[in-house]
Length: 280
Image (cartoon, rainbow, N blue to C red; front, side):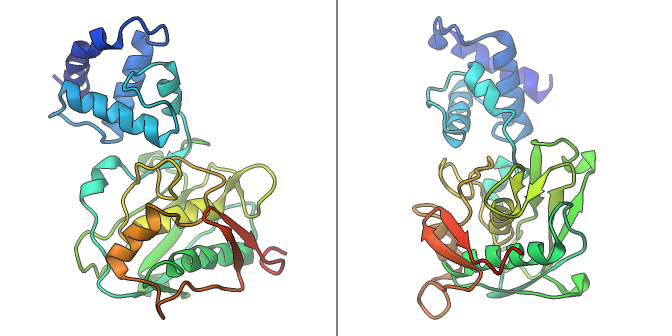
């Protein structure tokens, strides 16, 4: 018996508690449970209690009513664009052994000028260094960089479907990581670099993935930057989740105060307004 069939059997014990909810059908239940297995919310050790808890976690992350019932609305959450990092990494992340990190890009997304993308990458770095004790520097040689950015359309890397997995990042695997990590973006996505117009905001996705690369796992808070689903209005770390967790890993910002840069102006905890010279 495979993991999904086992969990489907365990979930049968919950059917009575779901009552006569008309939004529940066999297809919705199977869709939700398959998603929870595929994204590592659940494993072979799942019990009826842990299945219901996993459904509640997914609902909370997607901004739905949290009732533990895998109805049609919960099934629709499985189609939301998201980060490719799985829930299992919640318990496996480490942190960097130093506070100054470098990054380099080997390829760029289509539709945004390279200079503009570099500005976006620096703005995302500034967003994290403004809340914790890290600094970042872009370099030309990927072989010497701590973080290597690139674009992929490979199905084997969860890419190739628009509005599916937008990007993913590797995470430091030890308490004092000194290696190199990759961050990749989906080539199938339509990316945008400014606040208006269609497409997925590169800044939001990049800053989220950078959070993984410094050791933060997925958040269970709907409004957090590190929540798994794409949020067009969340561009930087927010409290009470992202900032506190970054500080717990790296301490307060260098110099003891939040840094401001010429790249952007902090409007509130979720909004960044870019200066006119960033996007030409």
